[in-house]
Length: 219
Image 1 (tube, rainbow, N blue to C red):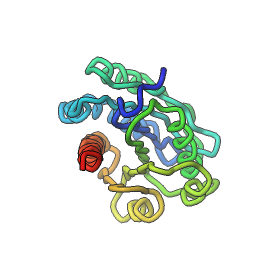
Image 2 (image 1 turned 60 degrees about the vertical axis):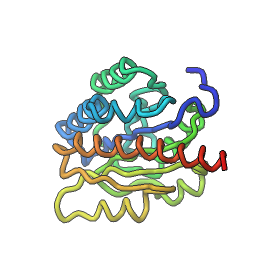
Image 3 (image 1 turned 90 degrees about the vertical axis):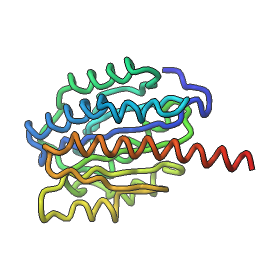
Image 4 (image 1 turned 120 degrees about the horizontal axis):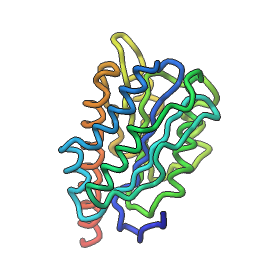
Protein backbone atom coordinates (compact mmCIF):
# COMPACT_ATOMS: atom_id res chain seq x y z
CA UNK A 1 0.00 0.00 0.00
CA UNK A 2 1.40 3.40 -0.93
CA UNK A 3 2.06 5.79 1.90
CA UNK A 4 -0.50 8.50 2.49
CA UNK A 5 0.54 12.17 2.50
CA UNK A 6 2.03 13.35 5.79
CA UNK A 7 -0.69 13.89 8.39
CA UNK A 8 -3.40 12.59 6.04
CA UNK A 9 -3.43 9.64 8.46
CA UNK A 10 -3.83 10.53 12.12
CA UNK A 11 -2.63 7.25 13.69
CA UNK A 12 -0.55 4.22 12.68
CA UNK A 13 -1.63 1.47 15.10
CA UNK A 14 0.13 -1.89 15.46
CA UNK A 15 -1.93 -4.56 17.25
CA UNK A 16 0.15 -7.46 18.63
CA UNK A 17 -1.40 -10.72 19.92
CA UNK A 18 0.42 -13.08 22.29
CA UNK A 19 0.20 -16.71 21.07
CA UNK A 20 2.92 -18.17 23.32
CA UNK A 21 2.55 -21.59 24.92
CA UNK A 22 0.68 -20.17 27.93
CA UNK A 23 -2.25 -19.44 25.58
CA UNK A 24 -4.24 -22.58 24.77
CA UNK A 25 -6.37 -23.11 21.66
CA UNK A 26 -9.60 -21.88 23.25
CA UNK A 27 -7.90 -18.79 24.67
CA UNK A 28 -6.33 -18.05 21.29
CA UNK A 29 -9.77 -18.01 19.68
CA UNK A 30 -11.11 -15.76 22.43
CA UNK A 31 -8.31 -13.30 21.65
CA UNK A 32 -8.48 -13.52 17.86
CA UNK A 33 -12.26 -13.41 17.58
CA UNK A 34 -12.48 -10.95 20.46
CA UNK A 35 -10.26 -8.44 18.71
CA UNK A 36 -12.20 -8.89 15.46
CA UNK A 37 -15.49 -8.28 17.29
CA UNK A 38 -14.03 -5.28 19.13
CA UNK A 39 -13.04 -3.66 15.83
CA UNK A 40 -16.69 -3.85 14.74
CA UNK A 41 -18.22 -2.61 18.00
CA UNK A 42 -20.29 0.55 17.43
CA UNK A 43 -18.27 2.67 19.87
CA UNK A 44 -14.98 1.55 18.28
CA UNK A 45 -16.23 2.23 14.76
CA UNK A 46 -17.36 5.68 15.92
CA UNK A 47 -13.88 6.30 17.37
CA UNK A 48 -12.20 5.26 14.10
CA UNK A 49 -14.25 7.84 12.20
CA UNK A 50 -14.40 10.56 14.86
CA UNK A 51 -11.92 12.75 12.94
CA UNK A 52 -11.46 13.81 9.32
CA UNK A 53 -8.30 11.71 8.82
CA UNK A 54 -8.16 7.91 8.73
CA UNK A 55 -6.31 5.42 10.92
CA UNK A 56 -3.90 2.78 9.57
CA UNK A 57 -3.72 -0.60 11.34
CA UNK A 58 -1.41 -3.61 11.18
CA UNK A 59 -1.89 -6.83 13.16
CA UNK A 60 0.55 -9.60 14.01
CA UNK A 61 0.82 -12.52 16.42
CA UNK A 62 3.96 -13.18 18.44
CA UNK A 63 5.54 -15.74 20.73
CA UNK A 64 9.18 -16.95 20.53
CA UNK A 65 12.21 -15.06 19.29
CA UNK A 66 11.64 -15.86 15.61
CA UNK A 67 7.87 -16.26 15.78
CA UNK A 68 6.12 -13.13 14.56
CA UNK A 69 3.44 -13.66 11.91
CA UNK A 70 1.49 -10.90 10.17
CA UNK A 71 -2.28 -11.34 10.31
CA UNK A 72 -3.11 -8.06 8.53
CA UNK A 73 -0.78 -5.94 6.41
CA UNK A 74 -0.93 -2.16 6.80
CA UNK A 75 -4.48 -1.15 5.96
CA UNK A 76 -5.83 2.39 5.81
CA UNK A 77 -9.28 2.44 7.42
CA UNK A 78 -11.12 5.02 5.36
CA UNK A 79 -14.64 3.52 5.39
CA UNK A 80 -16.69 1.11 7.54
CA UNK A 81 -16.20 -1.45 4.76
CA UNK A 82 -12.41 -1.23 5.28
CA UNK A 83 -12.92 -1.91 8.98
CA UNK A 84 -15.16 -4.91 8.27
CA UNK A 85 -12.61 -6.38 5.87
CA UNK A 86 -9.84 -5.99 8.45
CA UNK A 87 -11.95 -7.65 11.16
CA UNK A 88 -12.95 -10.49 8.83
CA UNK A 89 -9.31 -11.13 7.87
CA UNK A 90 -8.39 -11.37 11.54
CA UNK A 91 -11.33 -13.65 12.37
CA UNK A 92 -10.36 -16.02 9.53
CA UNK A 93 -6.68 -16.15 10.55
CA UNK A 94 -5.19 -19.26 12.14
CA UNK A 95 -2.43 -19.62 14.69
CA UNK A 96 1.05 -20.24 13.28
CA UNK A 97 2.53 -21.97 16.35
CA UNK A 98 1.45 -22.97 19.85
CA UNK A 99 4.59 -24.20 21.63
CA UNK A 100 6.88 -21.18 21.89
CA UNK A 101 7.90 -19.04 24.89
CA UNK A 102 7.24 -15.32 25.45
CA UNK A 103 9.83 -13.19 23.63
CA UNK A 104 8.34 -9.77 24.26
CA UNK A 105 11.49 -7.81 23.43
CA UNK A 106 11.61 -9.43 20.00
CA UNK A 107 7.92 -8.68 19.48
CA UNK A 108 8.47 -5.01 20.33
CA UNK A 109 11.43 -4.86 17.95
CA UNK A 110 9.29 -6.40 15.21
CA UNK A 111 6.51 -3.87 15.86
CA UNK A 112 9.03 -1.02 15.66
CA UNK A 113 10.22 -2.26 12.28
CA UNK A 114 6.62 -2.50 11.07
CA UNK A 115 6.09 1.14 11.99
CA UNK A 116 9.00 2.09 9.74
CA UNK A 117 6.91 0.85 6.79
CA UNK A 118 3.59 2.33 7.88
CA UNK A 119 1.67 4.98 5.96
CA UNK A 120 2.78 8.47 6.98
CA UNK A 121 0.74 9.26 10.08
CA UNK A 122 0.83 11.93 12.75
CA UNK A 123 0.94 9.49 15.68
CA UNK A 124 2.37 5.97 16.15
CA UNK A 125 1.11 3.45 18.71
CA UNK A 126 1.92 -0.19 19.48
CA UNK A 127 -0.77 -2.19 21.28
CA UNK A 128 0.84 -5.16 23.12
CA UNK A 129 -1.58 -7.81 24.39
CA UNK A 130 -0.37 -10.69 26.55
CA UNK A 131 -0.86 -12.87 29.61
CA UNK A 132 2.74 -13.17 30.84
CA UNK A 133 6.15 -11.60 31.25
CA UNK A 134 9.17 -11.89 28.98
CA UNK A 135 10.93 -15.26 29.38
CA UNK A 136 12.88 -15.64 26.13
CA UNK A 137 15.56 -13.45 24.58
CA UNK A 138 16.15 -9.80 25.37
CA UNK A 139 13.79 -7.80 27.56
CA UNK A 140 11.61 -4.82 26.53
CA UNK A 141 14.24 -2.36 27.83
CA UNK A 142 16.78 -3.78 25.39
CA UNK A 143 14.30 -3.45 22.53
CA UNK A 144 13.73 0.18 23.42
CA UNK A 145 17.48 0.78 23.40
CA UNK A 146 18.15 -1.03 20.10
CA UNK A 147 15.17 -0.15 17.88
CA UNK A 148 13.68 3.21 16.82
CA UNK A 149 10.94 4.19 19.26
CA UNK A 150 11.13 7.98 19.14
CA UNK A 151 7.60 9.35 19.14
CA UNK A 152 6.06 5.89 19.61
CA UNK A 153 3.53 5.14 22.34
CA UNK A 154 3.36 1.55 23.60
CA UNK A 155 0.20 0.53 25.45
CA UNK A 156 -0.54 -2.80 27.09
CA UNK A 157 -3.53 -5.11 27.36
CA UNK A 158 -2.95 -7.63 30.14
CA UNK A 159 -5.02 -10.81 30.30
CA UNK A 160 -4.84 -11.30 34.04
CA UNK A 161 -6.01 -14.02 36.36
CA UNK A 162 -6.31 -13.24 40.09
CA UNK A 163 -3.07 -12.85 42.05
CA UNK A 164 -0.75 -12.35 39.08
CA UNK A 165 1.98 -9.72 38.77
CA UNK A 166 1.69 -9.34 34.99
CA UNK A 167 -0.03 -5.95 35.15
CA UNK A 168 2.77 -4.60 37.33
CA UNK A 169 5.34 -5.89 34.87
CA UNK A 170 3.58 -4.15 31.97
CA UNK A 171 3.42 -0.91 33.96
CA UNK A 172 7.10 -1.05 34.89
CA UNK A 173 8.70 -2.59 31.81
CA UNK A 174 6.41 -2.49 28.76
CA UNK A 175 4.37 0.67 28.33
CA UNK A 176 6.19 3.69 26.97
CA UNK A 177 5.51 7.22 25.77
CA UNK A 178 3.06 10.05 26.42
CA UNK A 179 -0.34 8.94 27.77
CA UNK A 180 0.69 5.25 27.70
CA UNK A 181 -1.58 2.98 29.75
CA UNK A 182 -2.40 -0.62 30.63
CA UNK A 183 -5.88 -2.06 30.11
CA UNK A 184 -6.82 -5.17 32.12
CA UNK A 185 -8.91 -8.09 30.83
CA UNK A 186 -10.35 -10.27 33.59
CA UNK A 187 -9.29 -13.51 31.89
CA UNK A 188 -9.54 -14.37 28.21
CA UNK A 189 -13.35 -14.30 28.25
CA UNK A 190 -13.11 -10.56 28.97
CA UNK A 191 -10.60 -9.89 26.18
CA UNK A 192 -13.17 -8.46 23.75
CA UNK A 193 -14.52 -6.00 26.32
CA UNK A 194 -11.02 -4.88 27.32
CA UNK A 195 -9.97 -4.46 23.69
CA UNK A 196 -13.04 -2.33 22.99
CA UNK A 197 -12.17 -0.04 25.88
CA UNK A 198 -8.55 0.11 24.84
CA UNK A 199 -9.23 0.95 21.20
CA UNK A 200 -11.69 3.71 22.09
CA UNK A 201 -9.17 5.23 24.48
CA UNK A 202 -6.29 5.02 21.98
CA UNK A 203 -8.28 6.47 19.10
CA UNK A 204 -9.73 9.26 21.26
CA UNK A 205 -6.28 10.19 22.57
CA UNK A 206 -5.08 10.83 19.04
CA UNK A 207 -7.98 13.20 18.33
CA UNK A 208 -7.09 15.18 21.49
CA UNK A 209 -3.39 15.12 20.60
CA UNK A 210 -3.99 16.39 17.09
CA UNK A 211 -6.18 19.21 18.43
CA UNK A 212 -3.43 20.27 20.84
CA UNK A 213 -0.79 20.21 18.08
CA UNK A 214 -2.94 22.28 15.76
CA UNK A 215 -3.77 24.71 18.56
CA UNK A 216 -0.08 25.13 19.30
CA UNK A 217 0.78 25.65 15.63
CA UNK A 218 -1.89 28.35 15.39
CA UNK A 219 -0.59 30.15 18.47
